Length: 122
View 1 (cartoon, one colour):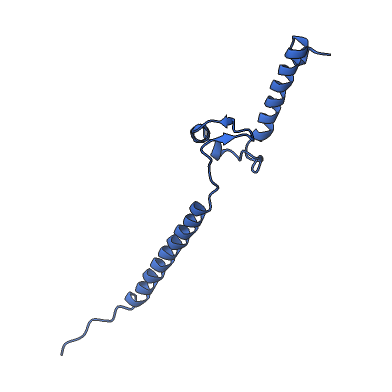
View 2: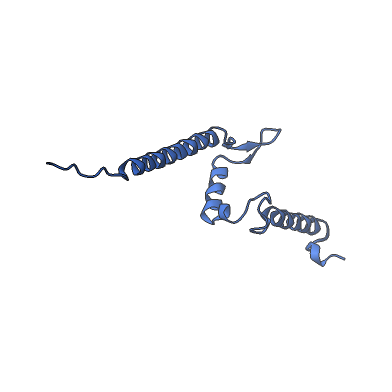
């Protein structure tokens, strides 16, 4: 009399586990791709150049993309945001820029009006 091999008790449950894993993995990637598409489609437009109300070019063509490339090259997007969201991770570079800009403006005015830099005025 021939005996049959015992049924593999793990094949059915392990097959279900592999199918469940595949569904979760493919479902996760489908969600990520969908969200990535939405982010790409709703990204803010980057202007080619910036002009003032009189039509004078303030920021020439290509300078915005060049600035973005420099920002990415120095790792700016990894340290915090440029508008202060995440200043707990890195310095608030907006405040630093504004501080430097106002020092430049004050020095320019002081030089024009008094012939010296702003720090030496009383």
